[in-house]
Amino acid sequence: MSHRRPKSPNMQNYRPQLTSVLSFGHRLSGVALSLGAFGLAGWLMAGASGQDAFGSAQALLLSVPGRIALFLVTLALFYHLCNGVRHLVWDSGRGFELRAIYAGGWTVVGTSLILALALWTWWPA
Amino acid sequence: MTIRHIPPFARARGLGAAGHGTAHWWAQRVSAAGLVPLVLWFALALAGGAAADHAKLVAWLAAPLNSGLMILLLMAGFHHAALGLQVLAEDYIHSGARFVAVAAIQLACFAGAVFGIASVLRVALMP
Image (cartoon, rainbow over all chains, first blue to last red; front, side, top):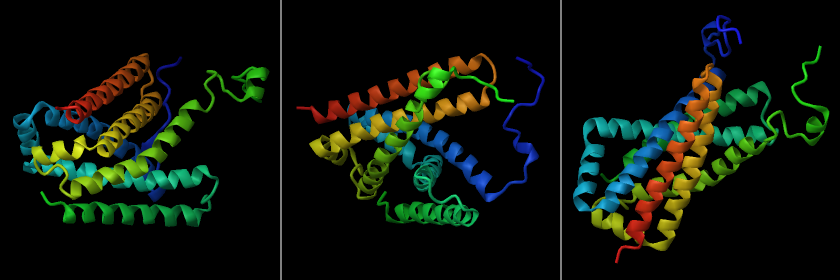
């Protein structure tokens, strides 16, 4: 294997477009949600360990950096969820016209923002 | 010119060069479909104050429906995470570290699921 050749993907050669930005966002939000999954496991462990451990976990989550991280995970969750449904529609062989791809893309952006903000407006803590 | 990575019989069976065919792709879609209702359930429960304090969390998580759904969320979530992170490692790591990364991803996700499920069971089966 040659090690000096440029290897795909060469993102720097492309002008950012909605399609590529959303595609990269799907991967980035997936990484954020993977970290969130480990956070969920840790949070459940704290809950199972007792009141004191759960109190410390909640204090961490409800601190300012904790809330920022939680909000970003919420945003990643709803974005990945909506865009994942978009992917499932594509998997059924539908929605490949350029207009449909852009319409679906903007719908995903709007819907995920609305859902994330709605959840945080509703959230009691 | 056609570059043939796959012998004719394997091509006819449609299982690809590694013999795994569409297993990874299909598992990613199935876990994704399962996660849609599970993450919505969890988000709504949190917004409804299910984990506002420790007593509420324990009472909520100990209900059989909620423990079951939480275990399903952990299983589907960590499975989906392992499948997705594996794709990222395969796409972006171009050295031998790729195999180490894929193995580490799978082991870490397996551990995350087990620790999470053990915690749910601890709460659910608490006397």
